[in-house]
Image (cartoon, rainbow, N blue to C red; front, side, top):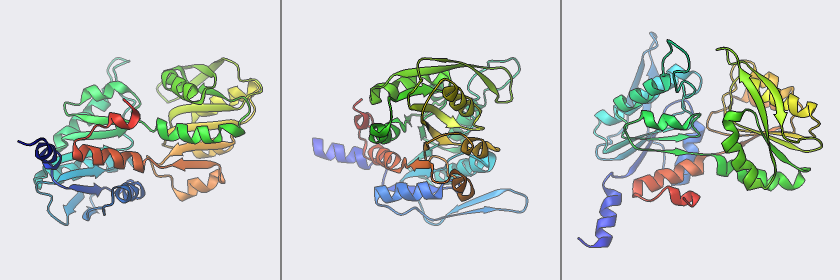
Length: 331
């Protein structure tokens, strides 16, 4: 078989790209579709009075390469069930391949048994995604890398690091002696990547989580932030407790301007009120989770949202064509 024909056959064996989305992140899904140059495929999603969900495709996907785009932020269980039902719908309509594109994966913090008599819910979610019919998965910045080992199907775990770091490099020139600070030691390795790419020092906040209610106590700053602009980095902001303590501790240690950087804007409970009351110059995040307009307004223009659509769109194209994803990051 000629090499050119063989390569083309490999690229085309899964058929054309078909993009579907649930109701959790329609704007991000539209931006992904725009990057690829396709329209989102039409489907119907209905919630009955008894809260059961119904999904129906408007056209056949037999023999096609299908991607179900759905972030699993709040309402978590509605969005997770939408994803699972959409995946099964595509599978039962004889799609050649089904990929779950999940910018933010719920239950990612429940990744191990670190206490007696508790579940590993991240593994349960992985099992459900597989059982629903996914052949592959595509995630962004998992809280714990070992979650990849919960799946028996291949996939791509991507990172928004390159998107965030390019923006930070652009604004670095207006910073005064910047230093990267990690909100906790668990994020230290990734924080070091930020510091190396920006060519700035790195400082750490040592803290201890003492209960199951998402509360932790920041104990001390390891490193010099006095008379410096501080870039506080983390993977997500949920209740905002860690970031609030990090900013306050940095200020107590003599920091100047503070920039807060995180991938997933979970923003649960009253976190937005807590964050916007802080002396933060700019909040920098991505659109893995949509932020309601009411919450956006509270930031008063201090929230910068960078889109991950080109990254996800490019990886979808490469997956369809059988090309390397690592080449995007010189890996």
